Length: 76
Image (cartoon, rainbow, N blue to C red; front, side, top):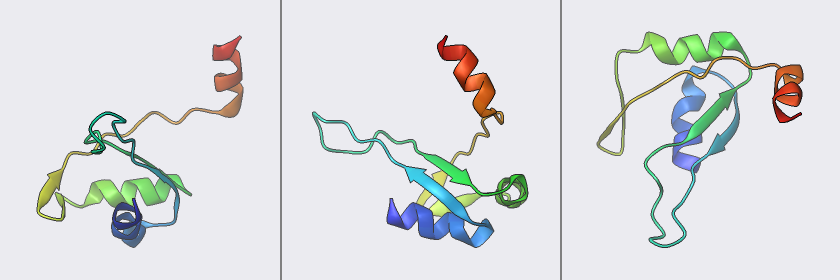
């Protein structure tokens, strides 16, 4: 998690980095979520053609921006 946070910090302010692990194997599940402080930080990440961390090429996907009110309505 720290390596991911450190890597993506070059593009902007990382608010949160979540790397889920499989309880049975103890290995990470090969995906993570990174939350940036601003939409511009996210755009900075996507301006770079490819991302390689510890020899592995990363595939990036952007989640649509959700507002808190939308989350609340979805749970009701």
